[in-house]
Image 1 (spheres, helix red, strand yellow):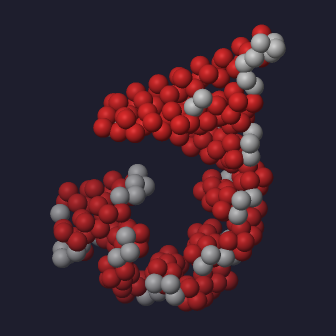
Image 2 (spheres, one colour):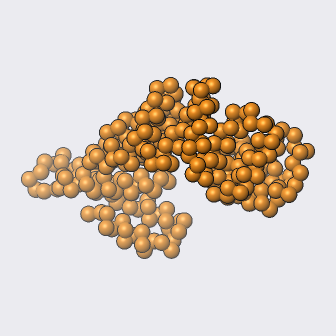
Image 3 (cartoon, rainbow, N blue to C red):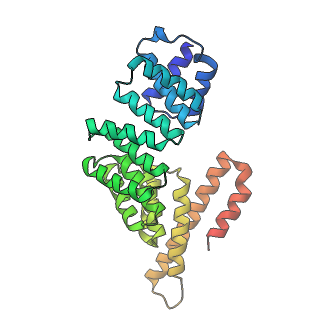
Length: 283
């Protein structure tokens, strides 16, 4: 039991999302144990199990945890009320969930967690434009919320609004320029817009931060290939233009070799498939 408790504690401290393993620990080890000896940590564990159960669509386990939390705190806790609304979301009783969120916001309209849950509720009901509107309002108050900018970027992409998605991706770069995923996302959006030069630049900046990013390596191949097609080597071209094109070809070859090497080290059985796929992308 102690080993399971320590694992759950570690996952909470590191914000590690091992939902399946957490549910397995609960089912096989903790569900039939008396957790009262843990003091207040019992309630943290029940909340942790509850959230993982929702992620794994284990509503019966979530309900068991929620019942204990509600019994202890008698529904006077905003935190438990939010969990209750999340449970209603999971069983698609959206009206009940919205009533709880609205009531909580009446008491504190700046509650960031509740506002984000409302946005999630709109998204679950496929009310994308309403979710976008609410997210923009939220970001007027919480401009440095990286998670919110990321979600708004994804929503704009789902609506094929690449201009606004680009703006969100740029905000993410400003907030956290050291996250390779922010660079990769910005590069991919620029690629979708046909801005191959800028996309290539940011795929390379992704690789500077994380040389193992396979998506960025593929991005180098795609962008360099498109740029090379736009700028073919011919006798009539200037030497500078031909040198630029040769540089594109060298970058394609470099990225190709990097991808093959990474698969050779990690999943050698896939090498024939990967080599064929890469060949179809290159000149």
